[in-house]
Length: 277
Length: 277
View 1 (cartoon, each protein chain N blue to C red):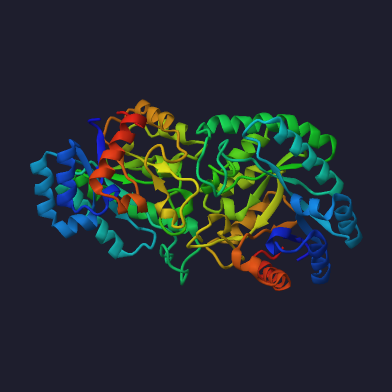
View 2: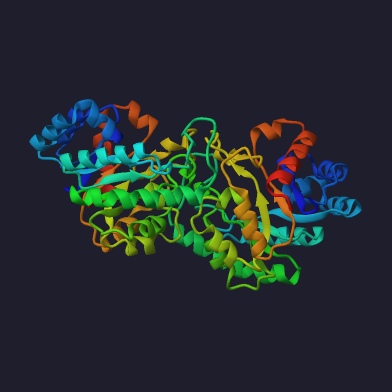
């Protein structure tokens, strides 16, 4: 269980101080943090908290939202890279953004339907950001999101597409995230995980619920509560040479309403039974 | 507009007799029918209704649900093939089924997480059914469904995967459906449509809504109401040599509550503006 990492939003109510404390109490060695929570705690204070606790920061969530091509988005991503460097995070998770103008959860207003152009803008932004990240020792981790989020959250929809996007860049600057929830359905997933050898920056696990809840963003479940067969994916990630932390990241209304200590205990048990690294 | 076809479930309240009458009144030349409605009307009566009206049957929906490997499923698909033959349908749409035991909309009970095995069972069933269809002049049309339905409705998730599955069989026995709702997000979609030349059995159009409604099955909208850029897909389908009917198939709670004549008029207008074949 030494590679178990708790993504902070699995226990969403916990601040950085609380999640660090929770990890220490539960014997968890690594944590995935979120930028807005780090900002609320203060970056310096957050750096000190994780250092004093001896925790690894398996990822910082998240950069991205690069499909509009705005200078502000690039600037915000540079700040995110600086924060990841300060925290010594193993990677900065990049959720690249949806169609320009489409806002998650809101009715469509003015937006662009040009999906290839949005994808091209991500490639352009990456060319700007990768060297900046490289200079600061930060690895960008491109996260393909399930295709149901293509319009509103990420035009990056498959692991193969993420690897195509990563390939022009040094592997230490641009890697990919393998998140079971997002990729389990893909007929090419095992081949693409093998292809990702040397590029896997993060392995995230959570289950895919069926039926999906009304808000599909919260369709994630504790391992074993959904439809995913984890062993082939975990084995493929191991065969591709990934030896880093394995992050449990679950957005789920019931978990968020529950006591975070109980949630952490529960996901640790499920992790031991179904992931077991 | 001569290639416009109304899928019966766009105007779901209409029986076969009513949808045939509606098509005649609106000058629509082709219709996609559903098996349960044909059964309610009576197969012979349905055959007579479409023949007397001079309508083309662009598809019969649907065969499939082959992932359990049960003899009953094969038998039901043979009946569906017979019905498609009787109706002179251009194809029998195949929704292959989800993980064995997963029931759409119901909590998980006993089921299998073995996705590769479920996919293999579809290939095996197809080997049984394709010759049977060929003998009756029926073309099976494999429909890749959006990956959000992988667990509960179709383990066939991409056009590329559908073509891999179709390839061992003669093109006149096994084709594929290109449904904009299901494939618009796919980074490979234009290449795969080109690859599908000679295999496209049906082109179905409807939009992808954002945000998705609580029941994702009903996330389909009238063309223009969602996020899809239709022209590149329609052009690619044309470039691949498809000259058949273009079916409008929209599952949408608001449309289903509306007056079917108004719905038909509305989708015809949208079709003229955004598809225009």
